[in-house]
Length: 216
Picture (cartoon, rainbow, N blue to C red):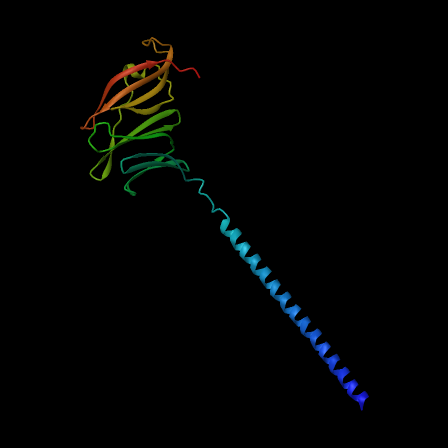
């Protein structure tokens, strides 16, 4: 009788041990599956983050290059394939837009030379070896083109290009290289033409200066 009881207890202990082993193994399998799931989730998350960090393609044919601001106006030039786009905005609203074909922008300036509270915008572009200047004035909610004077007579002698524009007080100044001008005291140098701009949208050439090249 005692032997039977001992045998029964032994079987019970063995059953409990087998059950405990099975339970522990099941817990380990569940934990392993859980860990794999978390790792996969983390991998997906990191992949999504890497996608989000990828830079969007840049439009290489549309690159803002030149800007100028005056009061609440902003003018800018964008270079596209075989053309540029000149636009002017007022209080962040575009009021003017124009395309120029087969040219390259060299400069853009803004001013109010005639102090009439209507800003002017100056655009210097190159077309091959030629340099062209476009002028605009804000009037009644829009931009009006203004005819910029061409070089004439004494100004044009020995013209050698390399034009630039700058504003000097109440003048818009066009500068360029010159050489072999028989009427100049210099064999070569820089010529600066000072123009004033009236309220009637007319230009007056006030003075012309011949200057030596500054040695770098």
